[in-house]
Amino acid sequence: MLRNLALVAAYLSAQVSSHDVSDHQQHLSAANVPAKKVAIIGAGAGGSSAAFHLSQYAALAGIPTNITIFERSSYIGGRSTTVHAYDAPALPVELGASIFVSVNRVLMDAVAHFNLSSNGYSEVIVDEDEDESDNGRDFMGVWDGHEFVLTAPEDMGWLDKAKLMWKYGLAPIRAMRLMRKTVGTFLQMYEEPHFPWASLTEKVHELGLVNATAATGEEFLRKNGIGGAFAHDVVQASTRVNYAQNLARINGLLSMVCMATDGAMSVDGGNWRIFSHLAHAATHDIRLNTSVSALIKRSDATYTLIPQDSTTSALRAPEHFDAVILAAPYHSANISIPALPEHVPDAIPYVKLHVTLFASPHRLAASAFNLPDGTPVPQVVLTTLGKSDDARGDDSPARVGAAGFFSISALRRVRNPRTGQREYLYKIFSPAPVTGGFLARILGVADDASNDDREDGVGEAVGAGDVTWIYRKVWESYPFEYPRVTFEEVRLDQELWYTSAVEGFISTMETSALAGKNVARLIVDGWVGGKEGRKVGASEGVVEEEDGVKEL
Image (cartoon, rainbow, N blue to C red; front, side):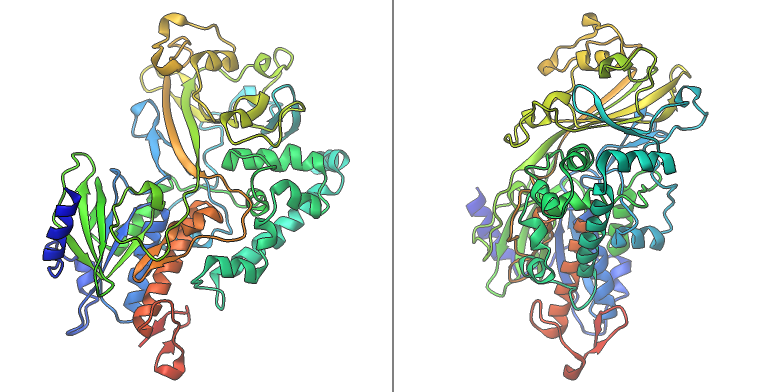
């Protein structure tokens, strides 16, 4: 069937798509200059950023564009999406990527550009009424499956900091200095002469970041004089909540990225709004519920693309594009490419992260954490490995250790719209499904087998009055970020670009958005200079604009 489709595609390859060009793009057209047709596969952070920055760079260079975004899901945002507690539209909660930080320049610029509102990190707060039960409650605790190895208030005073220094010595100061140095080096990738980068591998080596990526987090910290206790209790808790990976396996660069938390925030209504604004500002031709069945390279290095309805699997008419940006992992995109590209990305394993959102009138039970009755449990429970856990074990769910989960966060207080009762909204990250029995234990309530649906062993064996709403999601959330010294190519073939090359380097909303911006710049540089990835200087009749965009 696909072979026949390829023949049809070849026959129709000279035809232009029948979809209308948006008014936004039409006004960019110069007299007698054909628009560059670009397909972007994926409407997550990388795809939406690529679309926006491509339209911006091309407009400044006087090149009209016709951008089409194909997204197989029903929404824009990729791994950044919200669901609604109790199915109430007024109660959105982040299901995927929850926060970004002040050094995330692409996201911060988008928030400012589109005037999106944020009150800082609104996920982990006590909402509306002041909760008297929070008196004396620590904001964060690190649990090893047996005891809390560390607890801390949200606002640390001098006494709290003194206790931290007493426990860990100079390790916290050294870790913060190392983080600032490492992140500062990475931030050079945003600016000329390092931006745009045609080769991620070359840029990582040029900047010296390979010293961090080549080592495990454990090795990188040890080489920089950071003690084992702080690495185990604090840094590892951070790599587990952010990447579901332990320090003995994750690379050193990611261990530093996890510590860069200054200015953490989220966009009101959901971070997906950033990517929705970016995509819609670039084009009106956004095809949701549309995957790409096949991608066929033509002799002139342009592409014929065969769309497919992702809900019905019905194939649609082939379309022709001058360039294609793949903004999704190559091996999970399920695209048939008859003539393999010059560079085929390696298949890398992704973490299967189980996210469980639920509401309950109960606080976390002290007994579940071996605390005396009545002791307040920290609002955010992070985890690390216990003393008897295998720190260098494989990447199976057993890597979670005795704790059994990566994190539990009490997000905020909400009012149950059905009962009017004040309840708590929780989020759990775990390597396996959370059972009803587990929920009953952490809430300190009795199991209720009569309420157990027993589907796939994850039924809700807890009373309906104890857990009033629940939502489960399994994400392929990010790659296992092993130590490495080489990375995927940004340009897979002539006019075929790959934003997900960045995933094996740093996997965040920000780095995906940066990768999209980088690819957009490389494409426009190629259009202006007549050769992909070639940066043309003023001596060749091109003026350098203040923001680094070449304009004829």
